[in-house]
Length: 459
Image (cartoon, rainbow, N blue to C red):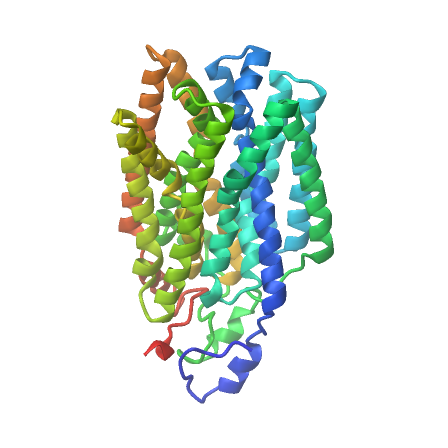
């Protein structure tokens, strides 16, 4: 049983307690481990094209603009599928959704293996994007079903850490496969890995007990009765999506996603062609970037959880860190092209591409506070779809800037400065707009739709 962190009034206390589902710690962390691996495969699939870009471009004789178009084709259906799946997530179990996605990831690797051509690469990336569009939001939704609201910081961070682990662990492995056995071998290994994961998930992955509560019963309880879902069961999506907290959360994700899209598509190429690194050296630096992301992901969200349990507002515990992270990464993005000293250049590059990572778990945490649980999957899908639009724009725009600039170096500088501007604007928007408690009250969600209980026990 989940014990309330502050004493509840005697009225309806037994009823409130009886509705609190039991926290199955062992199963919850097993599901977390499976979802971390799911996200690792997800981001390895995204990154493989960038890691194999140089040999693919050489073999097929394609330009920067064409490669940028291939990379951006991944996002053509990404946001739409994330949006569509978000709306059906209340009717289809997370077990089925994640299993289907992983199977499609395996299938998406086949076109490039059967016919190595630009159309085949585009077809494979489009299918992969459609299958991966809902991955982050739906795996987070599945994870939240296994943890009460005040225990989600670390699981959320671990889920998002799959991206960092993909580049920390998978980047060297994929690079070795490409170097030793050719770029096609990496696609084969990823297809097999996705298939194996889907079979394990079908056997072990089940929906948890949280987030399916019926809200009308909670409305009958007086404030402070221990209900974690005070307020209406459903609200108009217009009201949910146009409040400042959701808009600011989308902004944070948008800025972070711009840097991530640039990293997946062009960072390996930049390191090899502009910095003169070997494939192994580039993979090592990318792993270093991922290590910074992993440290931030495993430290900041748990601290935010602890602050919330001690009574800190969601604005300062969850909103400020994501806005600051995106803005600081943007400043580093603007600075590193103009720094010649090697160690300083590398340090700024690592912050630019790794420092924004905490925005990904925390924008889900702030959004969940202002959304009724029954609408969480749909809103997560919408937020993810809007926040990941840079995957459609950034790679192709960077390719165009490279081909139109007087030199590749100038093209990369223009691309990095544009990215920095986007990230700074998004970080400042997140800091300004995200007000979870205020927006929850305006929506009639007395304590937020899915809040972390405030801990009087912290005294």
